[in-house]
Length: 359
Image 1 (cartoon, one colour):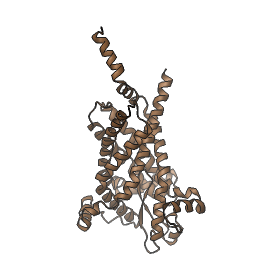
Image 2: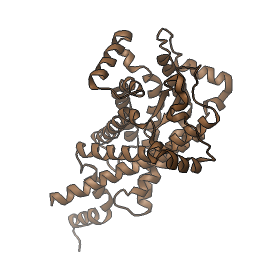
Image 3: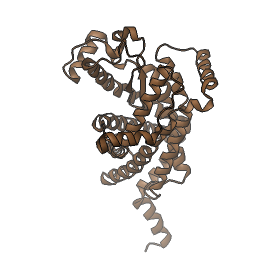
Image 4: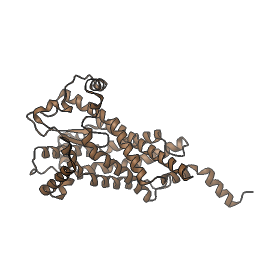
């Protein structure tokens, strides 16, 4: 005969191994280890995704050169897999010498990869990357570390907590990361033309504050948050649900790289679809601010977010708000899948490492 207490113990040890494992591993790493895992994931993501965007820009420039001698301050969008950046064409008199306008006759994406690697060197596939890392890597590290810390501080437990916890944690973490990193956009823009010393960086920030006030360091914050917060909420809401279902389906006790990769890809696709109108607005606002800075037209007030929405809708309807959706999907889905998969793999590595050294 099995006593009640024995039966309860048996149920815990046989029916709940997955829950026990998750509860143990969820809190099994330090914030420092989370930073290393997210930083490593950020570098892996940007190294794998950046060449795709460099090739895309070179193919576009082959049809229509970016900027010209007569048009100074022309801007274009550059994505390193972690963030979108508006880059300003520099040295108007030698536009053709810049990496984004270098000559070449490419017959498609694969041909461009091969020709750039062979004729210019393989490192040219990462052209323009260094200045963007000033913002992208710190923002990603802050975001992912803050998300997990917030999620578990809110009492999240695998399969037993409300799905609203990842939504809240994702939204708050994104606002925090954008708010902290946004002032670095000024530094990133200045570094586009040449490397800066620490003293020069401080001087740039001081000049910006003197000219436009402290809030000038957060220009473009509104459209960024308008897009990134809903995206983040949808991403983590769907990711946690999909990951739990895949783990149940394959009887897994802890997350694996394939599970995180697939869950991240699907969740990113869903989030990208619903937030694409905000992405269109953010891109318009970024380019407008970039060209104002390049032309030193500080007196002109940029259009408000809702004015941009009205203009786009009046001109093109809903099609205008979903312009560029397929290319964005092609960037966002692999980038999020690689980043989340790498981050979760790094967390699992540290969890196993800590368990082994605690024995």
